[in-house]
Image (tube, rainbow, N blue to C red):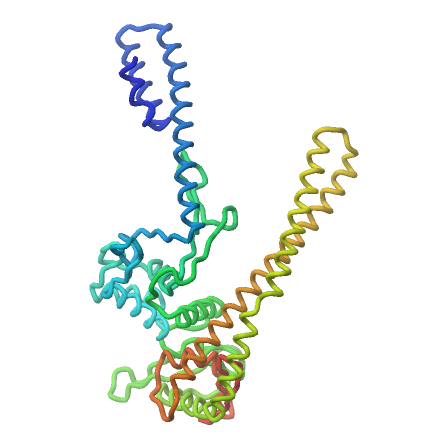
Length: 425
């Protein structure tokens, strides 16, 4: 039996049970009877418990080590399946120039209006390997790259955690365990302002649903002044030398009444944007000053943080009151109707506080997003020092929130800072 016991400490409970069962099964087949069977079952139970306890202990130690690294802001990465970075000589994340170009290409194609499906097909056709070295790209892979904060130089740690040390089942972290966010933990491949612009564009497309197709730089950027629908691109004379791309209201021929808004040629949209930008640039210094003032105001989250701390403290108090009420009901006889009434009151109070805390978090996130958008707008404005300038897709997305096309021929550009500039077709 000693030869069997020696390796048990390194076996999982499941493997150990299978091993011992096999041994005792062999002994039974060899003529060993009931006495050994009962001892074998006892041994199996004891050894399985020991192995399971050791597995739990190792799991806890590993988990503690990982969470300690997270708390210290140390970023670990599965480099073999992550595009753009490798482990440097100092153990830190190091940019891989060739892969970084692929990441920049993905972001550029997305901001040109391409969907993750179209980008995946393009990368596959170009024989560009995936993060794991495969030939075929999936749209989910593209989506993950577009939304991963590590490409802007930050790192959100403990996005998921292991629920059970035996099954190794993992779950997305929705607040069950602490998360850590490290700013500037490594060199960025994508500028933070551009990364945030992509996140805004992702959200814009989600909100728009299927009412538009993302196949150009102006997708989800042009709105119909009559019905509010987005403009979509259409190809005219596709099989002739007069082939041209036009943009018109997607709902123009839907419903009983047609929209009276005109169609626009792509080149004319670019010219109108440059005209609007020129008008905005007339008060360039004032616009820059106002942007910086707004950004400073958005950065100040002291009120939100103070209120969040007060709400958090009150939530702890209410949680304690609920726990004491439950303990009291378990230890002595209480009027159950009165108990349920008090419990419901505490629970409602806690839910209201929880809702308020969620609102404060969203408000803070909204301010951060606005700050990043203003930062991108300001960067674009500071780059344009003299007119005229050439149309640039990045400049357009940084500067313009959307443009509204009216039936009288006006195109009103709403810039990221809230300014509206009217042009004429």
